[in-house]
Amino acid sequence: KDADAAFCVSTGSEKGKVDWVLFHPEMHRVLFIQLKSAKGKDKPEQQEWLDALGRSKAEVYVWRPRDQDAIEKTLKGPN
Image 1 (cartoon, rainbow, N blue to C red):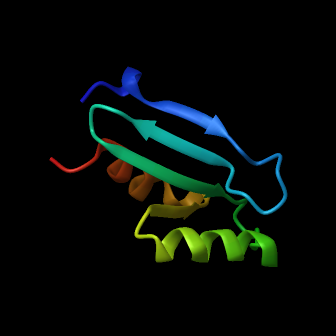
Image 2: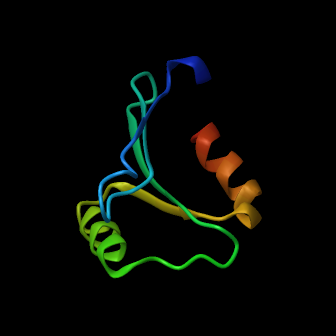
């Protein structure tokens, strides 16, 4: 699994949209990532996007600094 094959697109500048979209063509994965501080909360428009993406069966994550282990496991992908 070549980490260099992953692409990241920042969408956080548009109101409500996730911060990152990660695409890995070799692993056939697209991840939608919302980044939050330890105490950060989703705004209503962000939650709408997260809910819509989740209904589409997309890989959707809200990550905080405390989620480091889960983040690493997720990014490594299935064994």
